[in-house]
Length: 378
Ligand SMILES: Cc1ncc(COP(=O)(O)O)c(C=O)c1O
Image 1 (tube, rainbow, N blue to C red):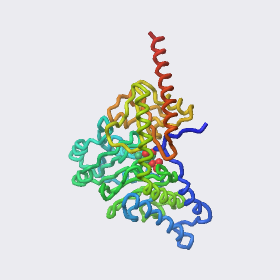
Image 2: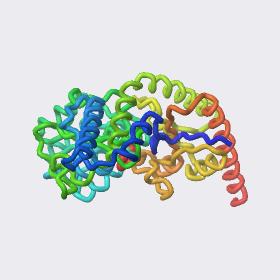
Image 3: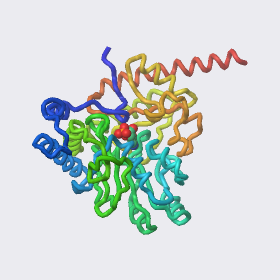
Image 4: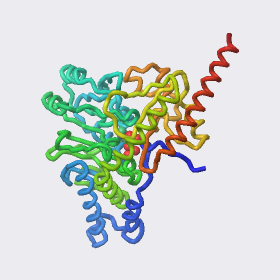
């Protein structure tokens, strides 16, 4: 049985071109970029080439890119850097939410459709005079794209810096740090067909970052630790491909996603599309199957060879309802029934048809079982 993977927001496979680019750095070219000799200089040049490729994806300067072990580290670095109160969005990934919570951050409410409430942001800026505002650009659970029109100005006028978590946005929508006027921005390679365990942090020129990880002074003393050269090289190539294929990706995923959404609405009663009516990235659909346990649906789908996610990947398995969906005002009941479908390059229409047909069967079986149980109870 060929499995159907619909969980590309959790991670993506390595693009073969990315893998090819990494191999020499895993084999013969093993130098440490911090070494002064030829092998070291060769590795340092590879890291710097990759830095340019990452910068190009978001229209930054190469010296504004710091390589990290992933977006979790990039996000934690910025939260730790903030010298004062933090205001964060209501739908932040746990790698912003958890460290921000520990500092006593203020979290903004979301609309029912998962959008930022700009009035709430203005109020929080007035009340708390924060040093940092941290917002997710595209939500990993719902795909909702945060409306940032005018946000940087509001934040800067209030004397705060703006951090954006762009992990689920790059490669899907244009991300331009000049237009966004962000001060910090986090990226991860494994969401864009690059390797796991590598990411990048954009820090606007002129801002002196307080490093989270200290030691050898790598990355201009902003992030210590020996460079993971193969992964960094792979990230650079993944960024170049993501940039080149952004329109093709959107075309491919949006047609499939629309088909998935239409088929679900047509074939399965009592479902809610979470984040409906808001602009969403082209690959993500979050659906509540009212009254059902999403964990049970996902397990049955998995048994049928179809892989989806319940809430975010990081919280699945904990059987807790989604913090993001609850911030949108969904009841615990609705949130517990939510499944995330996230599509990618390897999906096709036949996979979507197969998924909806299995899903309809599973939902019907579970609802019948519930009804039967209720009849027995009374
Ligand atoms: C929005 C968002 N931010 C941050 C992260 C963390 O990225 P990484 O896996 O590189 O640590 C993820 C990964 O799930 C994510 O979706």
